[in-house]
Length: 444
Ligand code: PMP
Image (cartoon, rainbow, N blue to C red; front, side, top):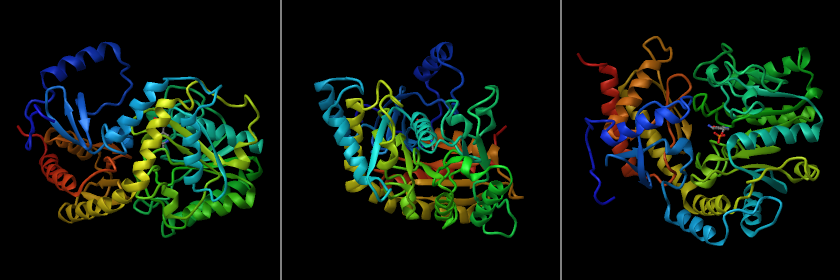
């Protein structure tokens, strides 16, 4: 961190001159489809801290969309990656090697299925979801799926068929994979079914679909995020996932948990579904798994995955040794200390946010688990305060705090799992200032 300016207070010139020049170059050659909300141009990072190219320091509470689980450039992850690069960079999944097998053994030990599990390794969350839905169709021979409104599972034509957290993700691309029926995600804060337990009501809704228009014998799988991520950091009511499990078992339907965002210690347990004690048949992982190196995994009950015939599914980069090394080092750290840290620091952070909510009526709800926390902003009439949320995130950037949003007006906090209480305190002071400025609105 030596030689970099530490700005405890508001930064007046953002983006700085170097950042401005790079953003201009980028605009000529990088796809404009990336949704970028404010001009942070990265130089380097350590732990929760990141620096931009002009030397400004920020606290990173976005962590590359919940990816930098062990913090930026954790020495043990960097060392594991360095070691691996010294051996070989790639060999392709046509061959065997130690790191690939060791990672799959670790995933089999950690898997929440309660029975032997196997893994298919890939590079991203999207590819993991694609693999999971292909496996579900392959082993059941059934064509249809149930997905959830507000879900996010990727942007390939199969995973995109489930994704619905923003309509712009679907618009303009024509027909995606057919066969997906969306049902509401139970949201006690914005109940869709008046006067009912939202979880029970959604289960009833699915039963009704089964009777009317979606024969359950046609349904290969139900795909759900155990905590809905991009859609608003929604924690389903207790018992809902268990209810889904039961419904699936009654009809021979597979249950797929997309733990791409919620997995690998993010919620204070290795996987979010473990808070509810509900086991999936298939689980998808990515994001935090490699601490930033691109790796994803389909983890499935062995009796399902071993049905895949030779050549049924594959890829070139699956099991890449560098990404496997990063994943093994990440799981070491998450298992030994960071899941527990996410639980305790997450509880501290959540309490501080709830205190803040007492002072600010525009904070409608603070929710989440561990270090997967959402803060929903509302207008006086309770409707989503989207403009306020967007302004808050921009103002926070100017105070040195990187945040992202989800849902319509929810600020999401997904810092590295190595976060300290001191960093929470520092972030809270920036957040409070940013909130005051956002509420006051633009001056002049
Ligand atoms: N599933 C979930 C739950 C996600 O949050 C995401 C990414 N936000 C994906 C899948 C897609 O992952 P990727 O961007 O790595 O393809």
